[in-house]
Image 1 (tube, rainbow, N blue to C red):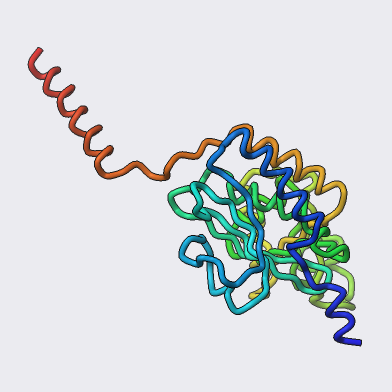
Image 2 (cartoon, rainbow, N blue to C red):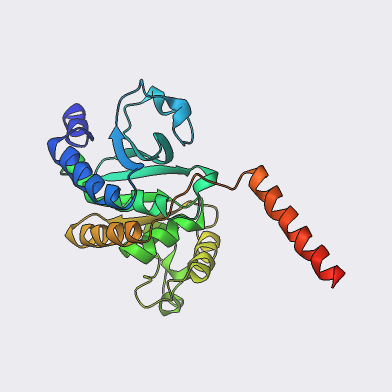
Amino acid sequence: MENENEENYLIDANTTDVVEIINTLNEKLHKKCDKCRLSITQEKDQDIQNIAHYGDFTKTDDPVLCFYYENKCISSLIISRDDDKIQYIAKTNTDFENKKINTLLIAVLFIIANKMNKNIKELVVEIAKDVSAYILIKNFDANLWGFYDKMDINTEFENQEDEEGAVFQPFPSFKNEDKTFSNIEKKVKEYEEIAEGNKVYCIADIDSNTQKKANELFDEIIEKLKITGGKRTRKNRKRKSNKSKRKYKKKQSI
C-alpha cells in the first residue's frame, strides 16, 4: 500500500501538459526578450556549472525549473514533493537579482504544478527568508503555519482550559492585513517567537484561483522585464568615474 501511495504523488516534469504550457509561456517571453527562455527538466546530465542552484540535485530526480538568459540558467527552482504538497528551493544569480525573475518562476510553478501530478494541492515553503513569505502572501493569498498553542496568540481563549496544546495550525490570516514587505517581515518574526523554536511554514493552495493569479502575474512581470548582461563591468565604472572628475575640474577652472 505504501508503494501505491508513493506512486500517486510522483511528479513528472515531462508530461504533455507541462511541455505545452512551458512552450506557450516561452512564446510570450520571447516577444519581450529573445535571449530568455524557460526550461524544466529532470535530467541528471545537465551542465551543473551553468545553473544557479543551491545544493546537489544531481542525486535525485527532482525537477529543476530554470530561467535562461543567453543560454545560462540565471535563476532556478529545485522542486520536490511531500504527498500532496510541493516544495521548492530557489536561487538567482546575484548579477540578476531584484528583477522579479524568481517571482516569475514561482508563478510558473503554480501554473504547472498539478500538471506534473493531478494530486498536488498545496505549495509549502519553510520560512528561511522573509522574501519567500512576501512573494507567496502578496501574490497567492498564502498563510503562515506552525506548531503553537492558540491561547498564545488569541486573547479569546486566554481564560479557557488548554485542551489541545501546541498543534500544527494556521496563524491569523493576512486577508485584512497590510501586505507590505515590512509588515510581513514583522509578522514572520512574531510568529517564529510564538512557535518557540519550531519551524514556521508558508502554505498556498494550488487551485484555479491561484493559477489564474499566477498567469496574470507572469504577464505583468514580462511586460516590465528588463534584463541586461548583469552588473556593470569595472571598465565601465572607471570610465564613468573619469568623466565625473573631468566635469569637476572644469567647474574648478571657472
